Image 1 (cartoon, rainbow, N blue to C red):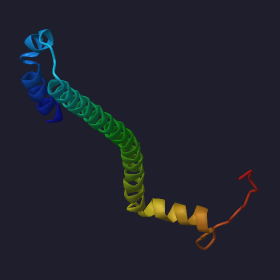
Image 2 (cartoon, helix red, strand yellow):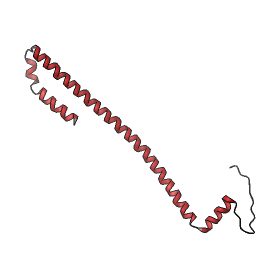
Image 3 (cartoon, rainbow, N blue to C red):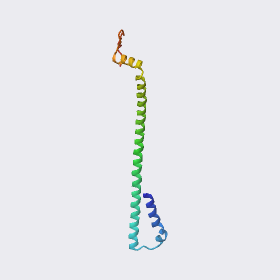
Length: 119
């Protein structure tokens, strides 16, 4: 939007620029030329500032998108692992074997041998 306004002002100002350059300038015209030139420079600076701030925001958003995509992929992997665990825990034989291994649960007549590991 800023660019359109700047372009509109530039067209209005520079429409008769060639004729204006050929004429002798009075103090009033020189003052008007200075004000118009200052306004144009100000508008250009504002446009550049606006574009730079938008560009910075776009780059920040791209960085956030990359981080959130990585986090999303990690969460999907964790979800698959948890779904696998749920499926395994629905099997009674797996639950019994897991309890025996992790909690040293034993049934009557089972012999438990514990081996030292590098864990």
